[in-house]
Amino acid sequence: MIYNHPEFDRHHELHFHDDPTTGLKAIIAIHRAWDKPSMGGCRMRNYSNDESALRDVLRLSRGMSYKSVMAGLDFGGAKSVIIGAPKPAARGAVLASMANFLNRLGGRYITGIDVGVSADDVAFMSKHTKYTAGTGALPPEKMTAAGVYTALKASAKHRLRADSLNGLTISILGLGKVGFQLAEMALADGASVLGADINPATLNSAIELGVTPVSVDDAHKMPCDIFAPCALGGILNPMTIPELNCAIVAGAANNQFTNLDDAAELSGRNILYAPDYIANAGGLIVLAMEYNRQNEAWARAKVNALGDTLTMIFEQADAVDGNTGATAERIGAARIADMAQGSELAA
Image 1 (tube, one colour):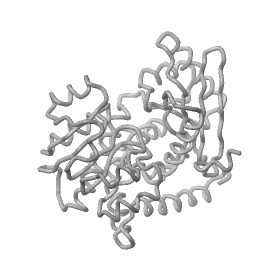
Image 2 (image 1 turned 90 degrees about the horizontal axis):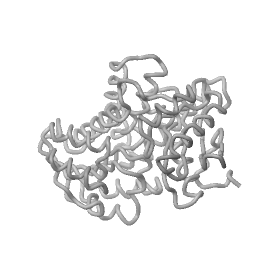
Image 3 (image 1 turned 45 degrees about the vertical axis):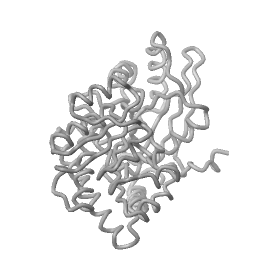
Image 4 (image 1 turned 120 degrees about the vertical axis):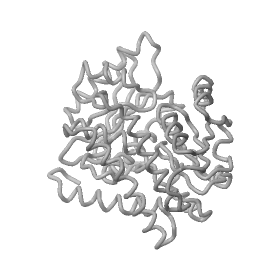
């Protein structure tokens, strides 16, 4: 039963779609729904099996609810996954089918870019559905990178008493759109940046920027001030945590822990962790900006406020046991409960 799944958190809705005509297999998970639509990107991956896809969409959608309330937004959290990447000739048909899947939910879920789904893909889907966002003048990945940069600065201020990243060493795992922009910002701030990526062309571009290349397997092990996971999740686990050689972990990846209970291992090693769903909230802020018909100044103010939120979490965690992951979960759960009480929809 889905209700007994370890990642099921009383999700409000879970929808499965199997389109034999296009080959689309997709899942939409709505974790929480309040008075506005639930928001979250659409991810496309070659999952090893259906269980991996289900686990991913359940965890990611839950994270979106926490991301929303911790960013001061009032949207529910949701996510969708497309299982398997179609061949180029079939991509349009698959995306159109996904758009029709969105239409069936009648606006309860709004989606945007994510791993494997580009802004062009979302723009294509928008021809078939009105329930997409994030293809305007302000790219979500730009604000995601800005939010992570804010998280790095807040973390460095709290743990290292540093007023900037100048002179610090940052190891970035994943130099995609967000990780690459983060590297640019850190270098401009005077930091030394180590970088790893599975794509040789991306890594070469980063080297030209001034990034020192390291292997994907070694990025988390490198002596540095800040380790910034900006690829897929699960990098923080019982095998890798003992190998960390940093003072801070702050990055763009979702679900950085395979099990959030392992956050205590970081605090036990005196490593400061910036909860990922706060650090990477910039993309969601852009979706909210578009839905609320706000401007870039509104979005940037929200992104800048993420630093204050992290500082509050750091200080509260210091007063207890130093476990910032558990502290963020406690505060987020309380805010979610408050949202449910104030909503006309069921909790």
